[in-house]
Amino acid sequence: MWLLPLSCLLWTRAAATEIQRPNIVFIVADDLGWDDVSYHGSDEIMTPNIDTLAYQGVILDQYYTDSEGSASRSALFTGKYPMRMGLQGVSIRASEDRGIPVSELLLPVRLRELGYKTHLVGKWGVGKSRAHYLPTNRGFDSFYGFTGDSVDYLTYNTVEELNGTSFYGLDFFENLDAVEDKSGYLTDIITDKAVDVIRNHNTSVPLYLHLSHATPHIGGGLVSLQPPLDSVEANKHIVHSARRLYAGLVTTLDNSVGNIIAVLAERDILQNTIIVFVSDNGAPTLGAKKNFGSNYPLRGTKGSPWEGGVRSIGLVWHAAIMPRIHHGLIHATDWLPTLVSAAGGRVNNNIDGINQWSVLINNLIPKRRNALITIDDLNGWAAFREGDFKIIIGDVNPDLSRHYGNEFKRGRSMKESLIFYDDILLASEAARVFKEILQLPLDVISISDRRADLNLTLYNQNSKEKAFCLPTKAKGCLFNISSDPTESNDLWTMFPDVVRRMSLRLRTLWTELKARRQPQSDPRADPSLRNYTWYEWIKNEELNLESPPLPVFPMYASLGEMQYLVDLNFNLLTDKLNVYIGNVKETISQSVSKLFYN
Image 1 (tube, rainbow, N blue to C red):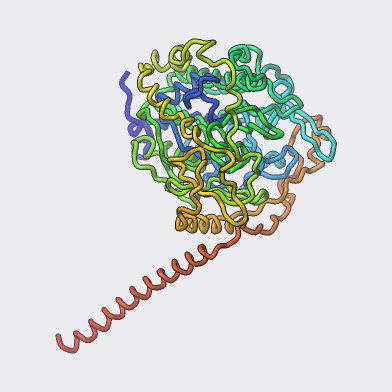
Image 2 (cartoon, rainbow, N blue to C red):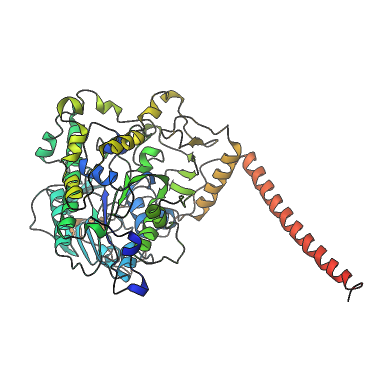
């Protein structure tokens, strides 16, 4: 099948009536770990539909989100670092009055201005206490799903503890109305709705479908892991009991991806659709909300600044994009300017995101050189990436700072109980669609090479946990992520100039953040006051609590940093003086020359 290059498919003002903008389907997994997709090399949990999409598109090997869901989602929708809006740190509680400020123009607003029909199916997670925080008031033409952080997969209820009392109620809505007559498994319901949106879409206008799954996050009710039985059976080779349940959740997610690809092909719009698949952050292998996901061999978990919490799964597919692995930096804030650009628009106001569309579509040199990975003023830590280097400073919980997940792999392997990886891949719904509809069969030889390139377990073989760096008030940790993605070898003392430069950059960013107040639950949020449903409970015009004062930067100032600033400012002053002296010299020279020449 002959395919037009994407540059010919994109809309321009000169050809608005002739060329249609690309459709955009943005799929978000919730708390999916690095080691929980099989294209990263694991033979434990098979994700053939996700893998096929990855192999046929661009795999984002260094895609960074924030360490928590509300923060990463706000970065995606606004193109700004969450700390600029007070959305950094732990996710918004169901009974908390917080959300993306209404002054922010979100991605669906910008796409709707370009003529898109915009739909959100699944999780919102960035504000529900006031009506103006809700998705249909933030640019989505329709919403079908849940507004909070998590929800029960069978009852669609959210339970939250407040002062020893359980708040519980329905959190499932169609637009602004509660859905009270639905039954079935949550992932299936969300997928079926997304399929209906695509089937009923008027293809003469472009589509933006944001499909935000609950899975594999734990349920928001009283029961944590809730996979359907058939998906558990498909993972019976996994010995660890809870890990097997988690794998069942991932299997339902992978099946959903296959269904979406199939219905796009059914509507004959797949070839002009951009598909993005990401996870909002790493898996919480430990802690109160652990889902038994694995970020191995990356260090740390969700809610930490280590790679396991912030370096996430990411890929982009379009028929005109050459399949490959992209090793350049991509940050969650980049999606807004990148997708608006792909749609033929432009973002002019000041944001942190970088338009990476030309990089992705034309395989150009990466544009992003650095990124604020995450910052948390309540816990008192931050991480910053510049080139190959990553710096972490502050008070990081040591219980979330090791390598977790490898212990799940004890016992039977995939190859002992199921057919081989290539066969599983080729039998997937996605592989069938790509081969039959787009004439794009999988090349198993190149796939094997790419899968080996993405397998990071070899980096972790010689690491010693007891020697791992933990940041303190006196010093942080510095790593070369390109050569040490598992953050095993601290380079703090080896590169003092890099440390000074990056720590000063973090100090500057710290002064720019909007301080977060401690999460505060509002008793007025109690769903029992509104027919046991999590409706909004605060009027838009009611004043928010004021932001607290800026906390102290979580690392002592060093003489080296101060000397670096002195040298930097002295050099700048010297440069300015040299320019000034040069200008004065030129002026005097011209004046004197007039005395001798007419």
